[in-house]
View 1: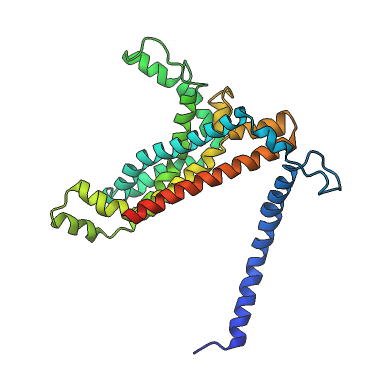
View 2 (view 1 turned 180 degrees about the vertical axis):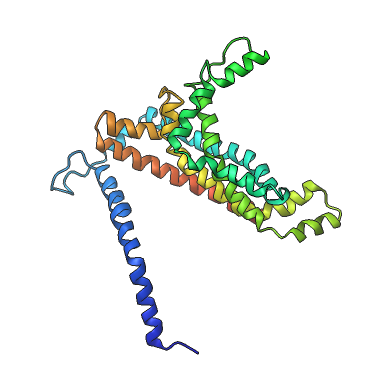
Length: 288
């Protein structure tokens, strides 16, 4: 039985009423703060003359090479972290989706287990592993691999190691989700037609899991760019990244105008980076 015009309009109004709280929440706690942040980045004084104080002075300061180096350092950190996570996550996702059988649920449980722990606690736990007197150095000294403790803590290497550990599940889960949808008969047909495992991987598994790779890459790339906790705790704050620089402007110098400008400027760079990565994925998908 077809619905009449009044019933369909009533359903639309009902759906809009249900979505209205979410829309208001988004406007109040996302769009308005974002608009205020952008406005503050273009002024030097907050008063009632909204348009008279508009200036580009904050952005002119950020054109200094030292600030550009910080942004590029964060770009390299985010891209390499996403790349390393992809190289490690793809075999794990492949095993979970296409090889693991009885123990699949156990492996997935172990994969998501770190999410049960606070992110800050996870970062702090690496102190006991990477410290000069930590578990890793004690083990390597005991087995005779090294003669003196390795100095890993408070170095860029420690940042990359912990970033890789903390963000790896964000890469594994999307790839696993896309691989789990692959029809197993396609893989069997490829094998029956004489294709090797590498040929099946390159022509069937990889193209069909590309959406998961793309989603996982962005899930790691975007938050890695503005990561604050890990560079400060494990890097000792010796090297500045975007997240630590924003914190420095807002909390240390109390310069909210320059901090807002740096946030907007680095956010624009992140949008450009994400757009470039998206175009690369799109081009790779077309080639396939």
